[in-house]
Length: 144
Image (cartoon, rainbow, N blue to C red; front, side, top):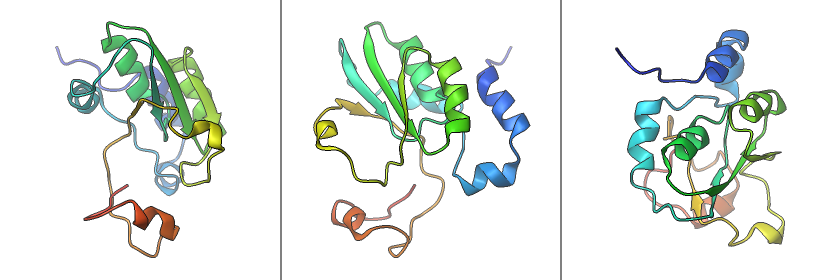
């Protein structure tokens, strides 16, 4: 029997939110088989502070917590309060905040996180699409 690839929270969100709305906000849920691959390569340690800067419904954080043998501090940001309501149910142990990863950060967040995880890229950014600061720290084919 094939394992379920998305939580019931993601399935419900996808069912109740039009595809056009999800696409416009870049809301693509990470299937379990994809997050399994990424998570097995993470240098997880006791009380590591982990951020998903586009947490969505919390699929990556949920899988990381469930796969880890150590306690973690998990954080998630998203621009959409509606989707964060699903993440709050899926990952109640996470600290979740409405925030865009492209917005400036308060200095308290600098060097705060030990690990940053994110859904794999789905499309390529063009150089004129985002603030020039992004291009100062990126190279090659920049994807989001």
